[in-house]
Length: 359
Image 1 (spheres, rainbow, N blue to C red):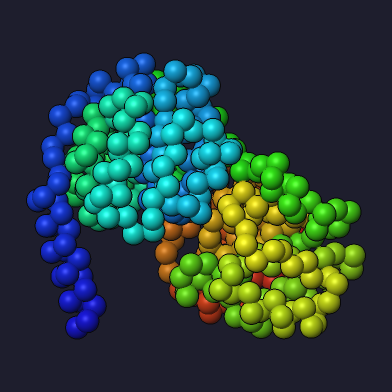
Image 2: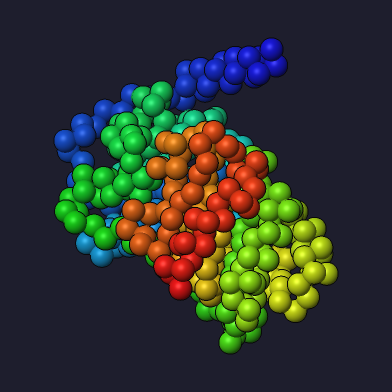
């Protein structure tokens, strides 16, 4: 009953925001071409790191073929270093986690010096008030996005690329705009600051990484499974070190592992930004990760990767798995089984086989 009430509440809220802010995009898709575009705005208000890694070829290819186009990015603080330091975006505006109408209005004013918005790109699949408000303020000529219900989205990337990997969505947009054979390899999100900060931890070490937790509780490996993975890596390579990639709120597991593995466990600083994480992954000999942003960061740095996915969402594996061009990665799932219910025995043979190939 509570679930039904929440769904009804969401529908009513969406209908209200659509009524207040949505508008019918008038531009015809046949007229879409980067030759006529001067200003592109990227909405990353959701703060998702994985999306930010996957979208990097969209920036690099446009800058190569259409260097006069200006970019603005509206994003949360956690991913701002990517757009400022790695991608050198013309205008980056940091918004709070839950931006209000006034926050979005101020952000739009800050990017107005680059001219009207010709193209807005958003990866938000379910528009909330903030997304509709941004649309109503920018009034972009074109909006490329995933939201099927909004009239303002006139390039529906989800509908055009359903059943494909997420990187194919942006490849499609690049081709649609006039770039015939775009290079979709991700840009590694590594900075000199991150290198200077963390390089001593990895020097002269063979390090195996484990990313055991995703954002959802259903993407978290059990403590026993994590320990079994650690034991496996150290038995596979007697000279190896271990490095767990965990968020600050999940660092409690490090204490128990430290008592067992001592100097073999590399503990990263508590406060890491997106580029720090990217650098750490680039220095790994191998990474085992659940379905989370680390998968895409590993693809970018060509780090061998064994990724675990939920067995109840096959479409999600196709869309959010390792990039199609990434030859050093494999995705594992057990049909009908969530990541949180996986035991090490479920994937140990596949892991060992893959590691022998990569070794």
